[in-house]
Image (cartoon, rainbow, N blue to C red; front, top):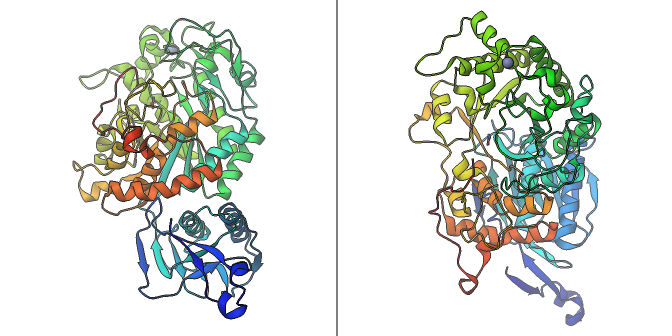
Length: 561
Ligand code: ACM
Ligand code: ZN
C-alpha cells in the first residue's frame, strides 16, 4: 500500500510542520470482486477521507440509513474514526448515498469520487450496499490515517443474480451468532443467497411446532464418530437447534445485508434424524437413532405412506412461514432406494401410479420424482419455487424446478437444455470442505479431495456445451460447505477463506481471467479478513521460501463425495 506524508495545507496554514503532518494512505479500487468498469482521472485531485467527512443518505429512507450505518461501521474499522451520518442530499465533503442509478440490474451502482466528495448511487438500496462494499474494500486498514481516494468513476453490476454460499449446520451445529458471522463474511464478498442446510441424518436443527419431537429428539445424537468412520466414537451427546424466532432473526439479519436465506429440508433421503423422532414415517418403522457416523444412510422417508406426504406439506408450511425466500430447497440428493424396493407401501404406490422402470430409470427412481413433484406442487401452490440437487433429474424433472448441479456440471447442462434454471456448484471446483493445499499433513482434517484457490478461480460457470441462449438458464454459482469435519466457526472460516474470494469473482465479474491480478487484489482483501478477525488459509500468501502455492492440477481423491 502506498502512503505519503501530506504537506499541502499544513504548510500554508501554520508552518508548524511537524505537528500537522498526517500520514495519508491511498485507496485502491482494484478490489475483490473486480468491478466491471473503473475509470480513473489522469490528473484529478483526490478526495481525502478524514475526520469531519459526513455520510449523507436520503431523508426518511430506512434502508439507506442502515446502509449509512454499515458504511460508518466499516470506515471505523478501516480508520479508527467516527463519521457522522446525516439526512439529506448535500454532497460537499461527504459520502452521499442515493438511489437513482439507471440500470436493468437491481444490484447495479455507480461510485463516483471527485475532489469534493464521494457519491454512491444504486439502482436500489441493494446496489448502494454493493457500492459501499467496494468503497470499503478499496480502503487500507490504517488506523488514525487519512485516506486519499483518487478521482474515479466506477460503474458496476453483478454477472449473476444468484451468488450463493451454503452452510451445513446439521453435521455440526453453529450458534445464531456464528451464523450471523458467516453472513457478514458473505456480505464482504458481495454474495446474496445463503443456502442453509438445516436438516440431515445427524441432526434436525429447526423447530417445527406441529412435530415437536423433530427437535426434542431429532436434534441430539448420542455421540459422534471419530475421524473418517473409524468405528471409534467420542461418547459425547451432541446437538442444538434454532427456534423459529431465532431463524427469523437470522432471516432479518441476512435481509438487512441484502442476503436471502434459502432453507433446505433435505428429502426424501438424509432423514434419519426425523425418522428417529417419528419412526412411522420410515419404510421399516424403525427404531432409528440420530446418526452418529458420516455417509449416506439407507433410512429414508417412505414414499408409499400418505402420512409422509402430509408431513412434507406440514413441514414446508412452517418453513414457508419462517423463510420469505421465493426459493425453498428440498434436497433430493443421495436417496438410496434399497428400502423402497422391499417396502410394501412403496411398491403399492408404484403400482397405483402405474410407474414402470425403463432403460433410463428404475421404478424407484421414478417414485422419487413423485415425492419431489409432490413437494414442488405444494410449494408452487403457495407461490414458492423449488430447488433440488441434480438427482432430481433422475426420473424426470418437476415442471418448474431449479437444479443445483453438484456432481460435476453434467446435471446443469442437462437441466439447461431442458430449459430449467441451474445453479452451478460442482464438487471438483466449489466444494470447500475439500482440502485447499496438497500437503495435507498440517491441515485441519477434511473430507478429502483437492480444490486449490487457482482451480476455483479458473472455473467457468457457463459450459461451452451450451448455446448462448441456454447459458441464460445458468442463473448462479455457489460454493458448498459440508461440516462433517468442521466443528468450529474458525475452521469453517479457514475452509472458505480465501476460496470465497475466487468464488466471488466467478459470481460477480465478467472481466477476463487474470490470476496474478486476482492474487494482487486478494493480498489487500486479506487485510479486511485480519481486521474482521476471520481465520483464513494463508498458503497462497506464503513466500517461495515458505513453500510455494501448489499448481491447480489435482483431482479430488479420498472419500470426498
Ligand atoms: C451433496 O453434496 N450431497 C449435495
Ligand atoms: Zn416405503
